[in-house]
Image (tube, rainbow, N blue to C red; front, side, top):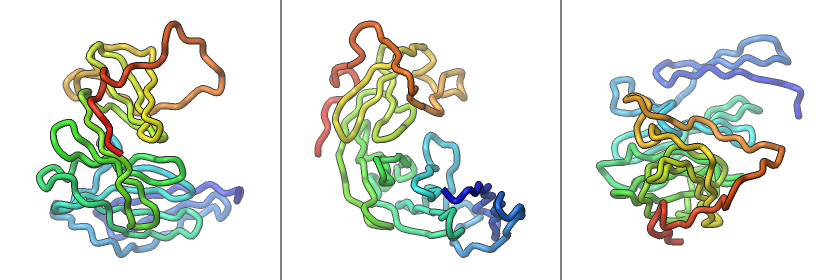
Length: 218
Protein backbone atom coordinates (compact mmCIF):
# COMPACT_ATOMS: atom_id res chain seq x y z
CA UNK A 1 0.00 0.00 0.00
CA UNK A 2 2.88 2.40 0.71
CA UNK A 3 4.93 1.22 -2.29
CA UNK A 4 7.72 0.38 0.12
CA UNK A 5 9.48 -2.85 1.02
CA UNK A 6 11.53 -3.22 4.17
CA UNK A 7 14.11 -5.70 5.43
CA UNK A 8 14.56 -6.08 9.17
CA UNK A 9 17.69 -7.39 10.89
CA UNK A 10 17.22 -8.14 14.56
CA UNK A 11 19.23 -10.30 16.92
CA UNK A 12 17.94 -10.29 20.49
CA UNK A 13 21.45 -10.89 21.83
CA UNK A 14 22.68 -7.63 20.34
CA UNK A 15 21.80 -4.11 21.45
CA UNK A 16 20.72 -2.81 18.08
CA UNK A 17 18.46 -3.57 15.18
CA UNK A 18 18.63 -2.39 11.57
CA UNK A 19 15.98 -1.88 8.94
CA UNK A 20 16.45 -1.27 5.23
CA UNK A 21 13.80 0.70 3.33
CA UNK A 22 13.59 0.45 -0.45
CA UNK A 23 11.95 3.89 -0.65
CA UNK A 24 14.83 5.48 1.29
CA UNK A 25 17.42 3.15 -0.22
CA UNK A 26 19.27 3.13 3.08
CA UNK A 27 19.66 1.33 6.40
CA UNK A 28 18.38 2.75 9.67
CA UNK A 29 20.21 1.50 12.76
CA UNK A 30 18.75 2.01 16.21
CA UNK A 31 19.04 0.55 19.67
CA UNK A 32 16.14 -1.30 21.23
CA UNK A 33 15.34 -1.38 24.94
CA UNK A 34 14.17 -4.98 25.21
CA UNK A 35 15.35 -6.82 28.31
CA UNK A 36 16.82 -10.05 26.95
CA UNK A 37 19.28 -11.97 29.09
CA UNK A 38 22.27 -13.04 27.01
CA UNK A 39 23.34 -15.51 29.69
CA UNK A 40 20.60 -17.90 28.65
CA UNK A 41 17.91 -17.31 31.28
CA UNK A 42 15.66 -15.98 28.53
CA UNK A 43 15.12 -18.11 25.45
CA UNK A 44 14.56 -16.09 22.31
CA UNK A 45 13.39 -18.77 19.93
CA UNK A 46 13.56 -18.87 16.18
CA UNK A 47 12.72 -21.73 13.83
CA UNK A 48 11.51 -24.10 16.58
CA UNK A 49 8.20 -25.17 15.07
CA UNK A 50 6.45 -21.79 15.23
CA UNK A 51 7.91 -18.99 17.27
CA UNK A 52 7.67 -16.12 14.76
CA UNK A 53 4.75 -14.73 12.78
CA UNK A 54 3.69 -11.79 10.63
CA UNK A 55 0.27 -10.17 10.80
CA UNK A 56 -1.18 -6.83 9.64
CA UNK A 57 2.11 -5.00 9.34
CA UNK A 58 3.63 -6.40 12.53
CA UNK A 59 6.26 -9.08 12.96
CA UNK A 60 6.10 -11.10 16.19
CA UNK A 61 8.66 -13.11 18.12
CA UNK A 62 7.98 -15.43 21.04
CA UNK A 63 10.31 -14.97 24.04
CA UNK A 64 10.29 -17.68 26.71
CA UNK A 65 11.61 -16.85 30.15
CA UNK A 66 11.27 -18.45 33.59
CA UNK A 67 7.74 -19.94 33.66
CA UNK A 68 6.04 -17.53 31.25
CA UNK A 69 6.33 -16.22 27.72
CA UNK A 70 6.48 -12.72 26.25
CA UNK A 71 5.79 -11.35 22.80
CA UNK A 72 8.10 -8.96 20.98
CA UNK A 73 6.48 -7.12 18.08
CA UNK A 74 7.92 -4.83 15.43
CA UNK A 75 5.74 -2.29 13.62
CA UNK A 76 7.06 -2.06 10.05
CA UNK A 77 5.19 1.18 9.41
CA UNK A 78 6.42 3.16 12.43
CA UNK A 79 9.60 1.09 12.87
CA UNK A 80 9.05 0.56 16.60
CA UNK A 81 9.60 -2.46 18.87
CA UNK A 82 6.99 -3.31 21.53
CA UNK A 83 7.37 -5.82 24.38
CA UNK A 84 4.17 -7.32 25.79
CA UNK A 85 3.07 -10.12 28.13
CA UNK A 86 1.94 -13.48 26.84
CA UNK A 87 -0.84 -15.68 28.24
CA UNK A 88 -0.46 -17.65 31.51
CA UNK A 89 1.85 -20.63 31.34
CA UNK A 90 0.13 -23.93 30.72
CA UNK A 91 2.55 -25.92 32.86
CA UNK A 92 5.40 -24.54 34.96
CA UNK A 93 7.82 -27.18 33.76
CA UNK A 94 6.85 -27.01 30.09
CA UNK A 95 6.31 -23.32 29.42
CA UNK A 96 8.76 -23.52 26.53
CA UNK A 97 6.28 -25.63 24.58
CA UNK A 98 4.30 -22.66 23.33
CA UNK A 99 4.01 -21.61 19.71
CA UNK A 100 2.59 -18.68 17.77
CA UNK A 101 -0.24 -19.06 15.29
CA UNK A 102 -2.48 -16.70 13.30
CA UNK A 103 -6.18 -16.75 14.18
CA UNK A 104 -7.87 -14.70 11.49
CA UNK A 105 -6.86 -11.09 12.12
CA UNK A 106 -5.55 -11.88 15.60
CA UNK A 107 -2.40 -13.38 17.03
CA UNK A 108 -2.75 -16.70 18.85
CA UNK A 109 -0.63 -18.98 21.00
CA UNK A 110 -0.87 -22.73 21.28
CA UNK A 111 0.29 -23.51 24.81
CA UNK A 112 1.22 -26.97 26.08
CA UNK A 113 -0.63 -28.00 29.26
CA UNK A 114 -0.01 -31.68 29.92
CA UNK A 115 0.45 -34.81 27.84
CA UNK A 116 -1.38 -34.11 24.57
CA UNK A 117 -3.49 -31.32 26.05
CA UNK A 118 -3.05 -27.80 24.63
CA UNK A 119 -4.71 -24.44 25.26
CA UNK A 120 -5.31 -22.05 22.37
CA UNK A 121 -5.12 -18.38 23.40
CA UNK A 122 -6.12 -15.38 21.30
CA UNK A 123 -4.80 -11.84 21.81
CA UNK A 124 -7.75 -9.43 21.90
CA UNK A 125 -5.50 -6.39 22.37
CA UNK A 126 -1.75 -6.00 23.00
CA UNK A 127 -0.86 -8.06 26.07
CA UNK A 128 -4.48 -9.09 26.79
CA UNK A 129 -5.37 -12.72 26.11
CA UNK A 130 -8.52 -14.89 26.13
CA UNK A 131 -8.52 -18.68 26.12
CA UNK A 132 -10.28 -19.83 22.94
CA UNK A 133 -10.29 -23.61 23.31
CA UNK A 134 -8.59 -26.53 25.06
CA UNK A 135 -7.81 -29.43 22.72
CA UNK A 136 -6.90 -33.00 23.60
CA UNK A 137 -4.76 -34.41 20.79
CA UNK A 138 -3.65 -37.95 20.15
CA UNK A 139 -1.18 -37.21 17.34
CA UNK A 140 1.92 -35.11 16.76
CA UNK A 141 1.67 -31.44 15.69
CA UNK A 142 3.73 -30.71 12.56
CA UNK A 143 2.92 -27.09 11.69
CA UNK A 144 0.35 -24.27 11.64
CA UNK A 145 -1.47 -22.02 9.24
CA UNK A 146 -4.41 -19.61 9.48
CA UNK A 147 -6.77 -20.84 12.25
CA UNK A 148 -5.50 -24.39 11.89
CA UNK A 149 -2.88 -26.83 13.09
CA UNK A 150 -1.41 -29.58 10.94
CA UNK A 151 -1.26 -33.03 12.52
CA UNK A 152 0.05 -36.40 11.44
CA UNK A 153 -2.24 -39.41 11.69
CA UNK A 154 -1.29 -42.90 12.80
CA UNK A 155 -1.32 -43.92 9.11
CA UNK A 156 1.41 -41.31 8.38
CA UNK A 157 -0.87 -38.81 6.63
CA UNK A 158 -1.28 -35.09 7.20
CA UNK A 159 -4.55 -33.61 8.42
CA UNK A 160 -5.48 -30.04 9.33
CA UNK A 161 -7.68 -29.14 12.28
CA UNK A 162 -9.39 -25.73 12.39
CA UNK A 163 -9.57 -24.62 16.03
CA UNK A 164 -12.40 -22.18 15.27
CA UNK A 165 -14.73 -24.39 13.23
CA UNK A 166 -13.76 -27.75 14.78
CA UNK A 167 -13.39 -29.15 11.24
CA UNK A 168 -10.67 -31.37 9.81
CA UNK A 169 -9.32 -31.80 6.30
CA UNK A 170 -7.20 -34.70 5.10
CA UNK A 171 -4.20 -33.89 2.87
CA UNK A 172 -2.91 -36.21 0.17
CA UNK A 173 0.68 -36.28 1.42
CA UNK A 174 1.77 -39.49 3.13
CA UNK A 175 5.23 -40.36 4.47
CA UNK A 176 6.37 -42.60 7.33
CA UNK A 177 8.96 -40.00 8.31
CA UNK A 178 6.22 -37.64 9.51
CA UNK A 179 6.26 -39.45 12.85
CA UNK A 180 9.87 -38.41 13.46
CA UNK A 181 11.79 -35.15 13.77
CA UNK A 182 13.96 -34.10 10.81
CA UNK A 183 17.03 -34.18 13.06
CA UNK A 184 16.74 -37.98 13.17
CA UNK A 185 15.77 -38.56 9.55
CA UNK A 186 12.10 -37.64 9.74
CA UNK A 187 9.97 -35.11 7.86
CA UNK A 188 8.99 -31.59 8.85
CA UNK A 189 6.23 -29.33 7.55
CA UNK A 190 7.61 -25.79 7.26
CA UNK A 191 5.03 -23.95 5.17
CA UNK A 192 1.53 -24.50 3.90
CA UNK A 193 -0.13 -22.38 1.22
CA UNK A 194 -3.48 -23.00 -0.40
CA UNK A 195 -3.71 -23.02 -4.19
CA UNK A 196 -5.83 -20.46 -6.01
CA UNK A 197 -6.86 -23.26 -8.36
CA UNK A 198 -9.28 -25.92 -7.15
CA UNK A 199 -7.64 -29.35 -7.12
CA UNK A 200 -9.89 -32.35 -7.50
CA UNK A 201 -9.51 -34.86 -4.71
CA UNK A 202 -10.19 -38.54 -4.79
CA UNK A 203 -12.55 -39.77 -2.10
CA UNK A 204 -13.56 -37.95 1.04
CA UNK A 205 -11.22 -35.14 2.12
CA UNK A 206 -12.58 -35.02 5.67
CA UNK A 207 -11.28 -37.10 8.53
CA UNK A 208 -13.21 -38.01 11.63
CA UNK A 209 -11.91 -36.20 14.71
CA UNK A 210 -11.44 -39.50 16.54
CA UNK A 211 -8.41 -40.14 14.34
CA UNK A 212 -6.44 -37.18 15.68
CA UNK A 213 -7.99 -35.96 18.94
CA UNK A 214 -10.26 -36.99 21.78
CA UNK A 215 -12.16 -33.76 22.45
CA UNK A 216 -12.12 -29.96 22.28
CA UNK A 217 -13.44 -27.83 25.12
CA UNK A 218 -14.65 -24.31 24.28
